[in-house]
Length: 109
Length: 155
Image 1 (cartoon, chains in turn orange, red):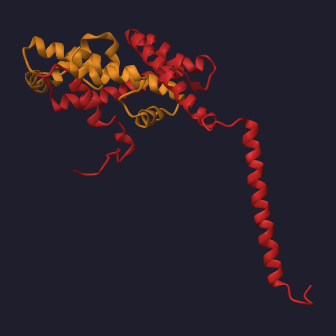
Image 2 (spheres, rainbow over the protein chains, first blue to last red):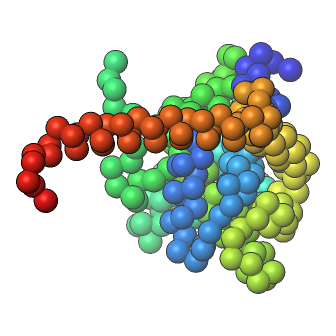
């Protein structure tokens, strides 16, 4: 395990989250259909979000690695979202990057 | 260094704190790998969507059980239903740790009384003594004030 993973693992060990509870709660409360969310549920959602970040970052990194790059770029994340079914809910935020050439041809038509 | 904590100025800008998420990203990648800034910001938006998704699904599970408050079990079911079952074991471990922490904190608060080293009877007795002393002080003050104020012939 890399030393850099220490923070996330440490948080798991002590039953805490790296994300601020108050902020997560405010984001949840934006949904007017939600009446109330217990503090334990809040904690679980926080932790799940951390695992989500971990997964998405690693999967995006795989694509940059295939391309032999040292920087994870937008297109890597776009590919990761496209390739994994559970990430379908992100399709609207990450429209797959369209090449400029393609855009130019569709405009002239 | 500015003291500005940086909460969102506008409710619409509500998202997780940038610095925290950037740090998490850095920890998850190998040391020599970086993440482009627009990609990091994109990830922030994805987190928001994820939170909304899980919260909403948890709420649906909660409503189906005719409950009003989202409970831990609802979140775990929601994660399964959404296809994030692989998170469930790890989240459950963290959950158990969290519950242990909570009981530890509660225990610490409760032991304050027992730390005094007095039995309940002794505590009650010492409390009554304190009341009696305070009463005496009050009464002597009151009678002292009365004798000062009273003038012959006054009613």
